[in-house]
Image (cartoon, rainbow, N blue to C red):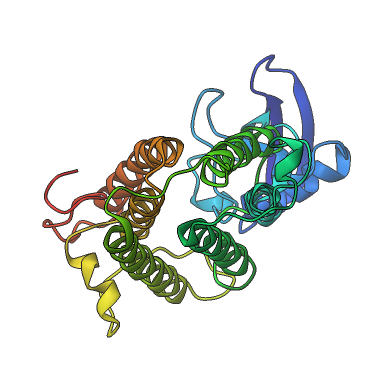
Length: 306
């Protein structure tokens, strides 16, 4: 049996001493024991590490496989209040859906009183509303039924940051698209038709990638595998790109920009592209680090470019 002591990573104060810990105990189990003596720090709030400034240990790491002596010394950091990923996603995606519809129906106090509850004479405005709503309903359903989250929680402060981003942009875009003075795209029907095809193609593609990624990870596990193309042609882009879900997401918003020809939409697309590129590069790097046989042809987000 091992002795485990847990010190505060900042002050080095001893917080907890556990005797008679099984050598095959996991970090997750040690977190649960620590939680019993410190109820304010539930396991999701805890970061346990071997070095005060080191990386957090994974919940599935086993005590006897770690470089520790008979007395294992760990350092604890409080990650702050946590909230589940599902809750964050449902909140940040319900907002844009509802907010956009408020502008679409022109509820009072948005535009001049004479426009209250009137509808636009341009069919592209109604199409744009359908596309925007479809996108966020899709995201909500994927959050509930498709995504498997490797991390259960994130810091509570993130929900405020994320909601400001999604809700704010939805209001800004919707204000202009549904404005009584909005003018349709310059090339008219052909531009709108092409944009709709791009949008729908990329939505199907994005969904296909999410299904392929879900099927890589068996329920309840955290195993990581290299994603490869499946029988679904929309997944064949995996031959060239590490994160095609972001590639298709970018394509969807480019389609929506082309459809509405609206500057705030173009700006949202650009900001989203920059953020997704950061995520894709990080994911690409972790694939290269984890898998020595990772396909060399792949780029993070744009084939051969980025």
